[in-house]
Length: 264
Ligand code: KIV
Ligand code: NA
Image 1 (cartoon, rainbow, N blue to C red):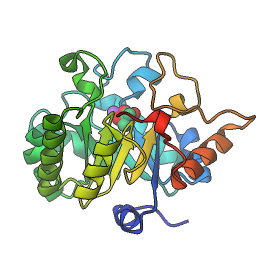
Image 2: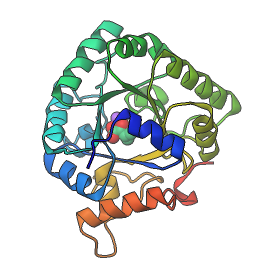
Image 3: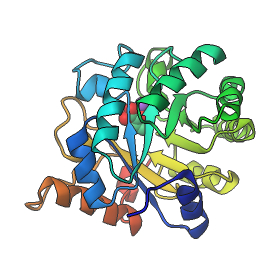
Image 4: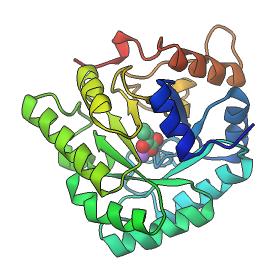
């Protein structure tokens, strides 16, 4: 099968075909995801929790991200690989460029960073240097201590308006994908309709152009609390490949996420 590229993903938005994404941190699961037809793979800094057993993503380093990105790359045949930039690895534009380059050389096809309009200069610099960027907005877990917990974002009209403005600013700066975490379902629709680039959601309802879940969550093997937006796909006697296939099917036919996985 042909490699999935940014052009593929943009065409999928235009064609209203849902984009599937799961996190992976190693070669073996990446290969199984390829077999199941998952188009994009996120090497998430959620590896701090699910691989390292930390209680947040803050302790993860850029070296950790490069190590897991390289492992995913070796197991991958055709999926598009996004890699998270770790906490404080992109707090200044030049530093962001150096660290993004390391992830790209480790095998990423795109880097993801968390934040709003303050990231515009950084995104502009990376884009100009040929590095595709995904901006992660809404609940940004690297800011958990500032938020005072993992909370749904964009609930008030002002917060929703700000999220729209920040999204447009980041697209203008060169962001190629926007990822929204834990926002009301209706806001997920507003934002997806408003921006020209693909949107991927987690806890953002079924209107976004794509969906992502942490692999361990959707296999029902996460260590901590299971968020409302998670569904366990490793049920009904399925094996791991079949669980990934069921996820792909349900995202494509929009049965996942259902209303019970969304926020008002
Ligand atoms: O690190 C991660 O797994 C993520 C997803 C939850 C979007 O950023
Ligand atoms: Na992340």
